[in-house]
Amino acid sequence: MFLNFKSKHTFFYYRREIKLFRYFLLLILITSCTTTHIKREIIYQNGQRVYSEEDVKYISGKAAVDRDSKEPITGILKKYHRAGKISEEIEFKNGVIDGIAKGFYENGNLEYIMSGYYHGSYDTVIRYYEDGVMKSKANHRKNELHGKLLLYYENSQLQGDFNYVEGKEDGDFKVYYRHGELYSNGTFKNGKLNGTTTYYREDGEMCLNAHYEKDKLISITRVDGTHLNKEEVKEWREDNWSYCHIMSKKKNNCNVKNK
Image (cartoon, rainbow, N blue to C red; front, side, top):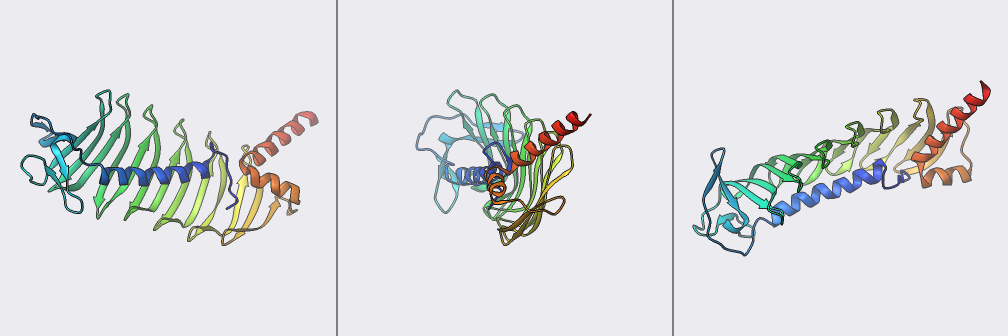
C-alpha cells in the first residue's frame, strides 16, 4: 500500500492501534490468574464480589475458579500495577468473562474500556490518552475489527474514520489534519484501496488524486489533470502527508509574493 505515513501519521498509527486492540483482548483472556496464594479478605463493589489475582485459578479451556472453593467466579477481577494502583478490572460471570473490562494508567486515569463481551470478543473497545482524552473507538466481532473505527488526536480532533468487515478495511474512509481539516478520503474494498483517493491541502483545496485498482497504484494526477513525474511519485510515496503540506506552503508563499 502506498499510504506510507511516517510514525506520527495516521495509517501507521491506526495499524499499530489494531495490534494493541488484539493484544489487550488476548492479554485478558490468557492472564486471568497467578500461582501466588495468600490469605484474603472478601470485598464487594457495587454488589459484586471483588477478586484479586491471588484469589483466582484459571483452568484452560474451562473457567476461572475461586482458588479455595474451586467454584467458577462471578464478580470483578482486579489487577494492580507494581506501585499498588489498580491496572485492570474485568467482570466475570460463572467463571467466564462477561460484562465490562477496564484498564487504568498508573496515574489512575482510564486507559481503555471494553464492553459487550460475546463469544470470546468485546464488541466495543474505547481507548484513552493518559490525560483522559479519547484516543480511539472500535467495534469488533470474533476478535476482528468489524464496523466503525474512529481515531482521535491528543487535542480531541478526529484523526481517521474507517470501516471494517471481518478484520479488513471495507468502505469509505476519511483522514483529517490535526486541526480538523480533511486530509484525504477514498474507498477500501476487501482490505485493498480501490478507485480514487483524493488528498487535500490544509487550506481545504484539493491537492492530488491517486487512482487504485486492488491496492495497486495506477496513476497520480494534479487538480488540472496533469500527472506527477517519476521523481514526484517517488517523493509522494515516501511521505504523502508532507507532500501536500509542502504544496500548501509553496502556494501560500506565492500568494504573499504576488501581493
